Image (cartoon, rainbow, N blue to C red):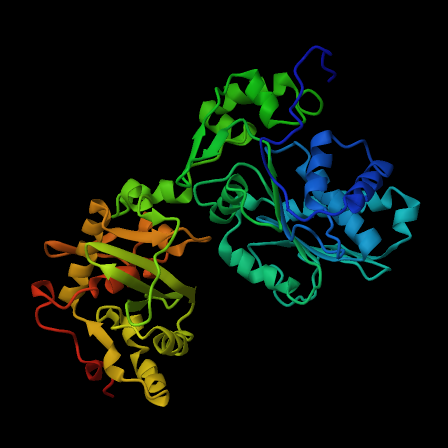
Length: 505
């Protein structure tokens, strides 16, 4: 339907914007826009802004942004942006592209739209070598060597493919780190890859999508571009904490702010009916770009550490740490999914803790511990006797120590009572402001502290590795390292386990 000329129209400028720092030219972005409008209707200004944010080029000809994103409510043209970016890559660069969505049908819909564009124009159709329609194998192959394949992230994704120039994560609000791990390595050998994320309002479990949004708000990432259209007023305070003001769901100004296509493809009558049908909460998420709570906030109700006190432990400038003036601890998740090494320095009354390694698996631990011991000469290296996955690797750690002629006595195993005391003491130190930690990107220690649950052990507790929603070995290793900052006292009566207790056949 046509709308009266005096009706409000959608805001074209994104409310959240982060652009890469080293853009020399937007020529290819303009080339993409010209191509899009030569074979389709004119683009909205908002769509042009998105493509320009994505497609800036450095002086060396590489993408200024290797990771790009656009957050916007549905039906506002994100699919068109992806289609035109992909068509440009296929036709003018011969790129090999993987397009993924949460569900196969969403990818199939995107496939059929691009096929329709090529089949509607003879000059484009003549440049196509083959179109695959088989279920799960949908894709287009070009005569110039370019190709695009469409996949669902719930299936095998991009495993088995290589030398991919572009990976698209549509429906990024459902994207999980496991999906990224399964598909992004296909770009490893490409000299100029680009990863594209598009999605609507983030959900409480949208960890990857939330990370992109927060990085944009914090203006982090030199080779990162992100734009978002939302009626939510978002900000980051001086301590790095996120806050937002939700819009009035019935306010037409909010409708226009969040929907660039408002007044053209999206009518006032449609949104009014959607508000009545959905109610305020769902309408705000689906049509106003209002995100669910941060994953850490959504899970904070069951967390052991108080969130405000835990966030207040951040320090911008870590203290200087000298060789021989720190303690070290390591831990492994119960399923061996992650392992971590943390250090502590200072005193129990003013401790500094930092997770210096957090990686998948545990096979890397022995070699890395030896390297760190050789470099930093910690007074102790400890782990928890109750951590079966950590204890299981002690034999290999001991072998590495012997091979490198390091004293095995440096590595000690905390008793169950010592570990309980370390957890309780760490909680108290956080509440009393007697522990500090650094501000770092992708902060595993911060996230572990925000989400770690407790497991009751008599009248005490321990941080629960098994039932916490996120890996918490960054936190448990930090708590153990802090506990070693003074000589054993009455809380550690009985001494440590001898390492030989765990090395017998």
